[in-house]
Image 1 (tube, rainbow, N blue to C red):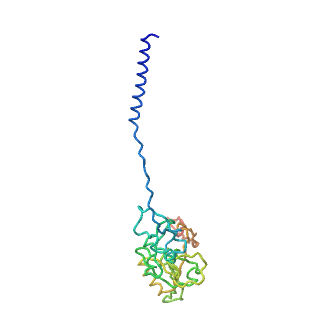
Image 2: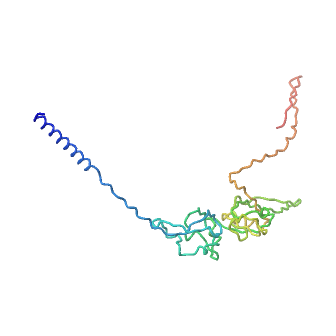
Length: 266
C-alpha cells in the first residue's frame, strides 16, 4: 500500500471518530436531566362519617356513624374528629338532613336527645309544624308513617235553613309532609304497635291557619299519597243521559198554502 493511501485512511478514521464524538456531545447536551419527584405522604386525621345512607329525621343507631381517615388539607372546622366525642354519645341523635354514606358528620348534622329544637331541626325553612289528633280510621288504619305525603280532608255536618242535615267533605291542604307520628320522627319500617294519636305535619303558614280553623269545624282525616309522585290516575266521568228533545211545529200560511216546519229544542 502506498504511503498516500495510508495517510488518507488514517485521516478518514480520525474524521469518523471526530464526527461520532461531536454527535454524542450534542445529544448528551440536549438531554434534560430527569427531575426526581418526591411524594410526601398525606397527613390524615380520623373523623366521623355516615356509615349508611341517612335520611332527615332518622335516629342514629350503632353502625350508622363510623370513623374514617381524612386528608388534613381537606379538613373543615365543623367536622367531628376522633377523640372529641365517643361513637356511643351520638347514638340516639336525630339527623337534621340527608347524609350519603361516607359523608362527613358536622357539628350541625345531628340533634342530640334532650336538646331543644329536635322538631325544629327537621322543619324546612319558611314552613311550620302543626299537630292534629288522629285515629286509626282518620290516619289510614294507622299505617301512615313519617316521611309520607298526605292530603288533609275536613268532614263536617251541614244543616241548611230548610232541609235535612247532610255530610260534607273538602280537601283543605294537599301533598303535606308527615314529620312525626306521635313521638317518632322517622319511619322504623316496623308494624305499628299502637294506634297513633297525633300526627305532626309540615305546612305553610296559611295552611296552618286553615287546618287550625278546620279542627274546630269538624273531623280531620289524612289521605295517603302514592310513593310515585308523578302518578296520575284518570277517572272516567259519568254524564247524565240527555233529556229527550222536544219538537215544536211552526205553521206558515202563504195565501192558501200551508207549510209546517218541525223544530227541535237544543
